[in-house]
Length: 563
Image (tube, rainbow, N blue to C red; front, top):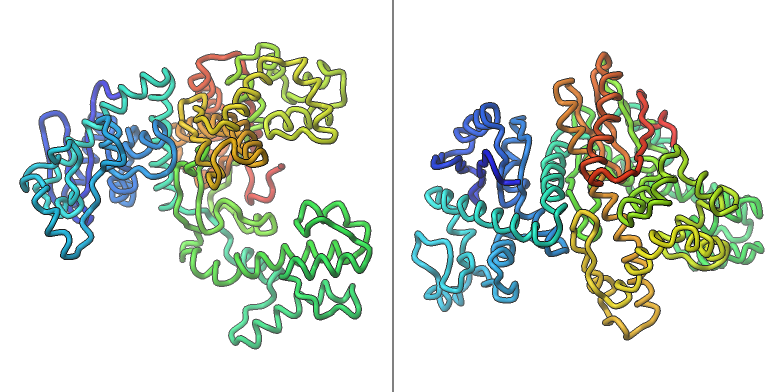
């Protein structure tokens, strides 16, 4: 994976200087002088870029719209190899060198006690201390541009050691690092480009939920009372109920004969027809969420003058490995989706993976019978036929298997699934047992999932309920994490193949991609997105006989896409 052309890009702590290593050549200088060299190397050699992290090294290049095609991200590789989120250079170096993370020296704190440890530091021109760790003050050390070449050589050494470690763990892990590194680059591009909005329409949607813009505290309080009144008018005599207090809401509902174990949305949904206050309460919650979290302040703060919603993205969540984003990009209320719209001369291409986790289960488990079911557009139909059950029952069974639900109808349906697909179910059961014991797992692509850190308040064996929760987490993480790897391989392939069309990925939402595409290139973009899935799935699965499908469509507004 690091064979052929390799270049290393690093940045100093001040963000003003950078260094590039390519073969025996080193270029060090102000960022604005180094970037043309980076662009030239990419254009002429298309190397695999190595850096400590994309966020630290590649951000200036991405901001300058220098396209970097391939990378090995040391931080992302460390997360895959060792689990969790923390991956600073000192920790990645220690892990690559086989040193205990507990012996990583503490960075100077900027006080008099630093003088005590100063004698332990290596000479000013040496990066590694006598114990083999990066010098404790390497952050300060990197304030001097003269040290950047040594910093770059250290990154390359770590990457090469990580490659060897990855090969020892799994034959697929190096490829996973490559797609994870591409995802980290894509995260910077997503943050730079933003999600296109129709600002006027979005403000209309916010106003419909939160009411008109307010200026004074009195106006804000009046708008709040008006929202509350849409619920409280259904409960004469209980107008003093605080709708933001779950205990008071539960008491109010009980007085009306609606006795619920909690006031969560999924619980209340079943009581819509019992009393009109339930429907009003659910609508109130939708509007209240928009008013308090996605209201005018959100719009003014996070949507730029170019009508793009921006936020920070990360390539993995530190658990099973899904991409995450801030400022509503990953949890925008459905009521606001009509505001996500292509800008003039463009359309949105939306692609959503269909039944991806069951199809991933077929790959991960190697269950030939379950793999055969994936050849259908609707995987649940052949599963239902094999079980001799209704499609709805088959779907419940498959989801229950992956999420660990064994009560009620799900438990009964699961028995048939275990008999029909013992190989796939056996893999999930083994993951569950490992999770109960707090043992680490690895996804299909090789990511370490340290289940012992989940619900770590009490150790495995101390509480049966917590053990069961760990087991359910592991049962799902081994599939969800693998699905995240496939998704990122797909997203990275799409990023590479639609660039010449002037298209760009503007949203990665779990199993869904959203592209902003020049209108005349829409049909070609759809074809390439679908081809990218076929290619990425083949490479990710090693050619397993499992079919992956996506619903790909061209829309003007995100809300026009079918769910």
